[in-house]
Length: 279
Ligand code: DHB
Ligand code: FE
Image 1 (cartoon, rainbow, N blue to C red):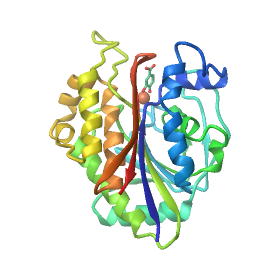
Image 2 (image 1 turned 90 degrees about the horizontal axis):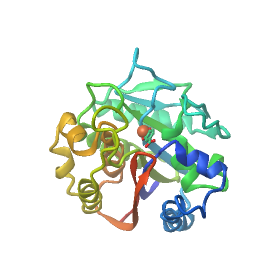
Image 3 (image 1 turned 30 degrees about the vertical axis):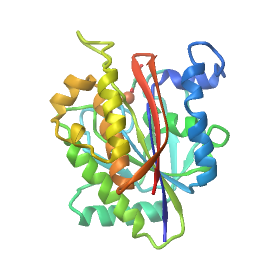
């Protein structure tokens, strides 16, 4: 039987990759941001997950605007990173777990979610920055399952639907006969908007309420909103919070909050990290 250790929500700003590469860990701009990850890494070291299922949004690397799946899952044994245009380079390939991926695909399809299944998939900063932040010494040692949720092109799945997808993924992982220890990652957010008249928009009050909701499990203050309402509240890219919601849905039940940090701004983003232990 698998063990669900819990989940982590984290931002995924491309500039973080540059800061990691240049080892700006003690730089005054970056130090408070990186310090926020230390307790989360400590918890993960104790929890020793074997597999990370990563809910994230592709930003135009593996999928583009001409063909954008609402939900897509990797079913490969290797995933290569590539840079979709930020100039942040690449990292070592990640090892997948195609057997567990196919089990999740079958169970989640039976539950009514029509996933796009990718036997080849390149992963962008939305996927690999969280892994690099959470497992800095050997990120490629984790087994990973990428699960893309479209937050790039409208129309998008509702927040409630993303949470329900996460729940179905959680049930699927629980029904896997292996002994893996599994952690769920939600990548993106928190509030940010990169373009238009509201470029630079942040909403710390809303972000704090979202993290409270994810910790308590009463997520209605997010799921009751339509995507246009979430754009209004969190910014056009702040909609990425649906990835955190999917992560929370996958854990299910009660959680205890291990740690949260929130730092404004990293680039144009309200950067958050929150670790939730399954109880
Ligand atoms: C930024 C944030 C993102 O989530 C992203 O995908 C790209 C850029 C930023 O704040 O620079
Ligand atoms: Fe993003």
